[in-house]
Image (cartoon, rainbow, N blue to C red; front, side, top):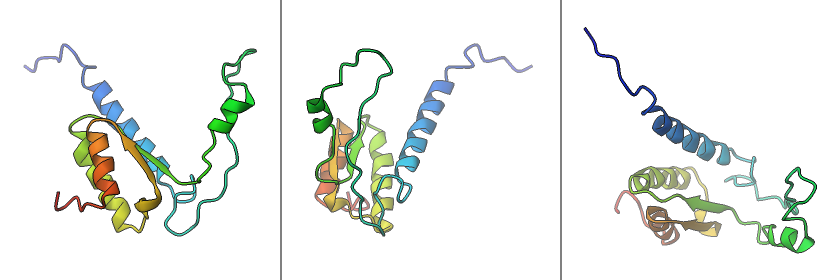
Length: 130
């Protein structure tokens, strides 16, 4: 007789977290959806406005809206921290390079292993050799 798992939901948040991260990455890489495409130049998107749906919004001044724009129109890639994410991030960067994305113009940042990935990407290190 098979024993029933006393904690059936303990594995779910981890799996859901990975699925959400993969889906977020894949949606961010749809050519033309965010202007980051190997074939098309990035179009000017104008300023973005923050909305909060409340009567009083903390980010309602025009100065904050000016700081919220991407003046240089370069793509921004942020890598999350976490030791095992490095291998996943290295695979993503390798995929982007092999499919013609120019990462030399992107602004790269990250925390912990994400910072390592951003640094190696900016230095144009081949992840197969690293």
